Image 1 (cartoon, chains in turn purple, blue):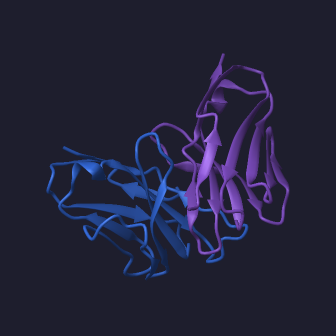
Image 2 (tube, one colour):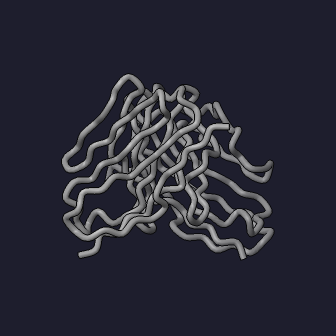
Length: 111
Length: 116
């Protein structure tokens, strides 16, 4: 069964800290690996998309890595800010367009 | 705005009522997806359209769920005889290309359905 697991489920850190969110997926035959952000009452915003042939993607303070063989991805957030508080979702995208989401990590940055 | 829009944003239904949820994708986007997101969970795939063709409906939980996209743009998700377990946020997403490689889905804000 295709599953995506995110650890931790929730995280609170003081402003300014660097942090890492973890994602693992059971079926390594992915097409893409995406990280999304979800704010309360809102839809999902794509943060980073890593194609299966890539190892990492960077956007500003965000860096996502992909180790397809071990079924793992990490999202690194540098110099966290209160505005980073949200739920972060990892999604494994497969060739048949099936997208499997994790349950998310609820991140709270303390001012 | 040029994003994906959904209506209504909130819907309260009595058990047994039929509901219709609307999605307006980004203009020109070929692919359209519906997801169901229960509280505290990630979104779960319901169905996928390529233009007006429904190519995958394997995620629809029962025959009470029906989706259409007759002209290849606006889509409607209909739930008949709603049950309490249908309470969730229903998310719509669209994608410009057919091929998912390197192409992201753009999500709407969702419709929060509460069945009493």
